[in-house]
Image (cartoon, one colour):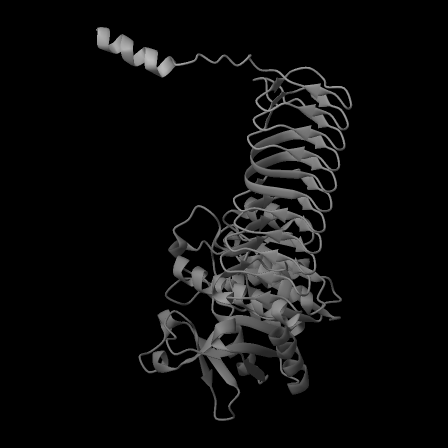
Amino acid sequence: MQGVGAIVLAAGQGKRMKSDLPKVLHRAAGVPLVGHVLNSVAGTGITEVIVVVGQGADLVRRALGEGYKYALQEEPRGTGDAVMKALPLLSPECREVLVLCGDTPLLTTASLVRLIEVRREAGAAAAILTSIFEDPRGYGRILRGEDNLVRAIVEESDATGEQKEIREINTGTYVFDREALERTVSRLQPDNRQGEYYLTDCISLLRADGLAVAAVSAPAEETAGINTRRELAAAERILRRRECERLMEEGVTILDPDTTYLDHGVKVGRDTVIYPFTFVEGATTVGKGCVLGPGTRLINSTLGDNVEIQQSLVVESTVGDDCRIGPYAYIRPGSILAEGVKVGDFVELKKVKVGKGSKIPHLSYVGDAVIGSGVNIGAGTITCNYDGLTKHETRIGDGAFIGSNTNLVAPVTVGENAVTGAGSTITKDVPPGALAVERARQVVVPDWAKKKAEKGKDK
């Protein structure tokens, strides 16, 4: 949207969160609160954004990165003061200024676009996004004149008893003609109970100058700010529900959206089925025709098509087409599974490359390894990859068969089509096609139980 700049107010302390973390960095649906606000702004096409930071400024900068300009509000002197700090950073090309709070993660791009369009159509100096709350406590109230235009905004701490009965509230989201904003914000005075510079006072100043102020109403669900952990949890539910609805519209089957937890922006292909108590988090991408869950968690991972995962955890790994994982598997960071791999129950993989069609069916730990295609890993196999100082690599060639309860002491290589006997501890390389067996010779003592019993009677 050309000619519009945005100021996002992210300097609030958030005392009611009772947290050492800046309020705007608390996460909902995997994204910081202020990140949701910035995503909605980006959806309008606005490219010039100033983020006002205060307490925890360095944390906010690190979390958001270098794509924004930052204005520092060293002392919490109110929203008007915050805007005054930010305005000089906007380029002259920004003739309109959108102002938002960084703790309103439910705002949609559509409402922001509508707010800007209404101001332009009305030729108003400003437009305010309002909402009707059943319980408006804690919010500034909208005062309207006989012409139904906004006359002023009164903060609750300064409101009369009659004004507190008003249910139309100020959401803290505005769009201003820039010249009008600069002219009025410079005239603000801290003559209120809080001793702060209220941006809301600009509205009465604009009206005193004979300028119109329009208002656009948005649903209460969308405009609520986050001030407590309880409100954070409520926002989380709404955002995750939106993600479920988005994916269902794109052809994903979600059996129970109320127990499916999707981070904002995850990608899931059509005809995938998601069972309850499944978590899809971070930058995860899931292909078509997959079956996820129940009880599955995927974090920053990539899955191909037709993958089935149940009751398992996959973290920062890549899973190829037609793989089968679980139940109760743990795929740790850096693992890469090729097409058609099976990872069964109680298997843990860590930084492993597994070739096409290989199987690790159950009860195994494989770490720091390269496994070829068509390999079978028997139950109870482990790679002994750590010597107390250094991690070492195990390599298993195509078509190899690793017997149950094999210990592969790295660094070690098992050649193509080689076999290890069950219960072996392999410390030396196994040539291709060879059989390696390392275990003590079995000794059988006939009638041992009978002899033991007779010896006991003699005592």
